[in-house]
Amino acid sequence: MATTDADPWFQTLFADRMGGANYGKGTEIYKFEKIKRAKRAALAAYPDRQLLDFGIGENDDMAPAQVREALKREVDRLENRGYADNGIQAYKDAVAEFMQREFQVSLNPTTEIVHAIGSKPAYAMMPAVFVNPGDVTLMTVPGYPVAGTHTRYYGGEVHRLPLLAENGFFPDLKGIPADIRKRAKLLVLNYPNSPTGKVATRDFYKQAIEFAHENQVIIVQDAAHIMLSYDDQPLSFLQVDGAKDVGVEVHSMSKGFNMIGWRLGWVCGHAKIVQAFADVKDNSDSGQFMAIQHAAAAALRDPQIPLQVRAKYKRRLAKLVAALKQVGFEASMPGGTYFLYVKSPVAAGDRSFANAEAASQFLITEQSVCCVPWDDAGPFLRFSVTYMAATEAEEDALMAETVSRLGKLQLRFA
Image (tube, rainbow, N blue to C red; front, side):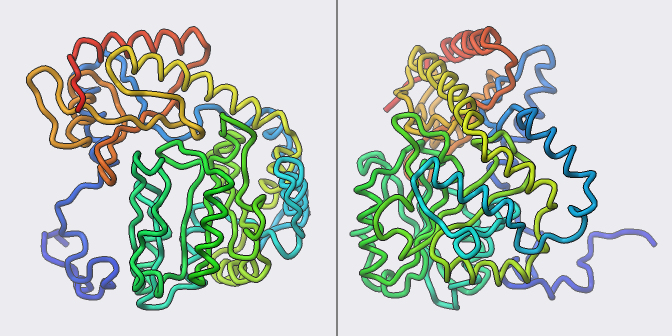
């Protein structure tokens, strides 16, 4: 049968949350897809020019050898076949040990910890626990949008809290309108913050906890980058008095342990919230492969792994800060993450930029330098230090090439 451009018979059956009858007919392109297209175009136009890719947001190393060896052992064990459902006790025990060792946070591994197949599904499922039509989720922007997307799926609304430089990249909780506070169910935080690199303080967490009590709001703290904290020891939300009374913290094995793609994390905190999340999860998935959970437990019990990952990205960030400052950026070391969030240039030579997206497209097109634009709270560019470089000499060469290419552009800033 010949294919046509006509709508399929089920075109009108798509849910409203997907766009209804207009699903698939929009012309807007997601910014990360624009970046991918621009990268392909730059590679095609300049096949002999190295792509300087600062847009990647995932660790460039494999998981440590001892973790991979643990997986190889566990994968051959008969008892690790089958469904894990809401997780194995061995992994939850390792999480509890990790939280005690790193943060002095005491958790009951049976009732206050549950695994997740990565942190992303946790943010997708959490609105199902609390959000009814008309309820509000408070979300910081720029930020990870998944909890907001699923809030809308359930008929809720998202109230955006801009992370502005003048507020130290903290949300203005006092400025939230009274009618929004009254309908709010969830406050989603993320510290160390992606992409700004801001690290939370105890005082900020105290303010957030007070806000949660005053407004009967649940806090969900995204701690995916927590082990990539540079100014001081990593700070867990649950270290602050009263935190466990009002919320949970979501952790990931990805960033701090070089386990990108292994799809494992956990939710910990108030036992009733953990239980409710586990109930939703039990109806959404059948758990991560048990061999992966055993390997992750081995990673959690090795305190050297996150220290080594942290040292590498701290070193790379320091080099990138120095490089970008040479070509005019107002750059300084972030408190955490492997991202550098800097004000976008407003012009290059006689070419002006309406926003960060236009600047990023210019950089990739003209000089094959890839970064991620954010225009949610002012025009900023995000540079990631997860580029591929096997040695420090290769890192230094990449920085020199970055300075060479950007230095010739005559970048101007507001």
